[in-house]
Image 1 (cartoon, rainbow, N blue to C red):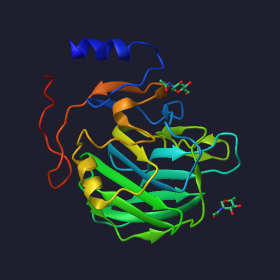
Image 2: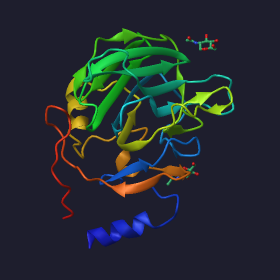
Image 3: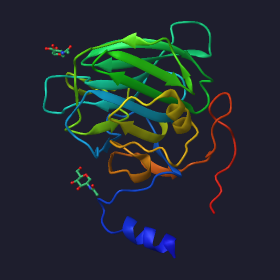
Image 4: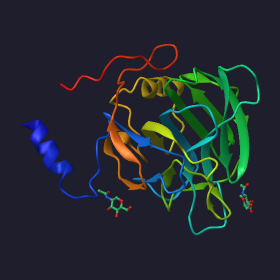
Length: 243
Ligand SMILES: *[C@@H]1O[C@H](CO)[C@@H](O)[C@H](O)[C@H]1NC(C)=O
Ligand SMILES: *[C@@H]1O[C@H](CO)[C@@H](O)[C@H](O)[C@H]1NC(C)=O
C-alpha cells in the first residue's frame, strides 16, 4: 500500500524528485556529451559545504562533480576530480579539489578497483578543506578563505569546464552514486554514517534519496549491484536485496 502511494508520487511528473537509493548513474564512455545536471534544493551562495559521493572507475583522470555558473567567466567554482597519481604505489592516488579555479591535489590511499567514497568539507570562514576517502581524512589544507560558492546554475556530474566547454580529457567513464550535499560542515561521526549509507543522513542541498536531475547524452540509471558498505576498503560485496 505504502509502496503504491510512493510510486504515484514518483510518477506525478517528469520533474519529480526520485529516491535513487538503489541506483547508480552509469557513464558508458568518455564523452563531453555525457553528464548529469543536479538541481539543488538550496540556491544562493554557500559559505560552508560538505559534498559526498561514491564512484567506481578505472584508473585515470576523471571529473566527478562540478559547480560552475554557466554564464560566468569564473570557472571551476568548486570541482572534485580523480587525478592520476604521479607516485608508483598503486594504492595511492590523488584527488584534486578546485575552489574558485585554484586547485589542491590531495593524496589518499584506497583500492583503485573498488567503490571509492569521498567527502569534501569546506568552511569559508577559515578556508579549511577536508577530504575524506573511505572514512579516512587526509591532512587538512586551507583554500580560498572568504570565497562563497554560488549554486545558481546547478551542479554537474562527470565533467569539468575549460575555456571552450567541457574538457574531453577528464570526461567521466564509470559509475557514480550516493551524491549528497549539505550547506554545513558535517562532523566526523556523520561522515562515517554517510559512508555506511545510513538512510537517516541525507543532504539538505542535494539528496540522493530525493534527487532532481537531468541526464544529458548516454548516461543511464542502473540498479546498484552492491548496497552495503563499511568494510576496510569502503566497499563490500553483499548483494542488494529487493524486499
Ligand atoms: C527540478 O528542477 C527544475 C529546474 O531544473 C525545476 O524547474 C523543477 O521545479 C524541479 N522539480 C522539483 C520537484 O523540485
Ligand atoms: C575568485 O576569483 C576571481 C577571479 O579570478 C577573483 O577576482 C576573486 O578575488 C577570487 N576570490 C577569492 C576569495 O579568492
